[in-house]
Amino acid sequence: LTFDVVSIHPSAPDATGGRIKPIPGNHGYTAQNFPVGLMIALMYKIPLRQIEDGPNWITTQGYDIEARADGPHSVDDLHTMYQNLLADRFGLKFHHDVREGNIYALTIDPSGLKMKPNTSPENDSIPVNGSPEHTTGVRVPMPYLTWFLSLLLQNDGRPVVDQTGLTGNYDFTLSFRPILPPDASPDALTPEQRDLPTLFDAVRTQLGLRLTATRGPVDHLVIDHIDRPTAN
Image (cartoon, rainbow, N blue to C red):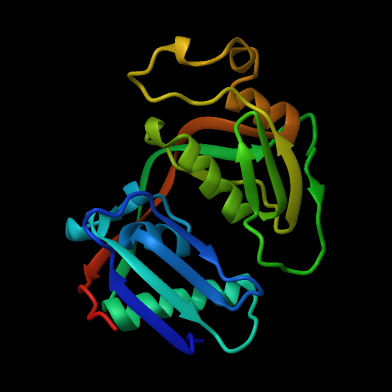
């Protein structure tokens, strides 16, 4: 599985922001000023802090990439195609190293699952959207949910590990108190935001899931080789 047309250019040194998104119609991906390290994290659904031994430029150099296929593909196939792009154009080689570490175990709460199963066909929408005050998930698989929660809790240094046994896709809404950086004052939140539940309480009461701090297997992606690509 490979894209039919791929264009890669280093972003301008003064470029700001950065994003990657599917091309409408499931025809590929487009990235603007997006670092390769974050591409690897997204396409392999692994927090950036668990990607090891890569050169510094994979997090500091942004790239503009357009990768198109002649026809529509499933989201899973598009991710496989992007993984192949990283291997072909960046020479990415890596291995996994699973080590015990601090994790948040994601399990089904005794109160019961509150997310709604969604069996609709795949589409090109990003599964989770919105602000902490009103986050909406549509057709969200568990690997994506655990990756999303890991991003929210990245300051804790504990990845979220799925131990629910759930294999489907789910819809949900989630409202929680915005998570501030460690050095930020609680005064940065509005009174309405301070009235919202913590993420841990929201996950339990609104999703029917539970986050438990414990020890468990942590998957580390160890980079063996990666090159800067030639522009085209």
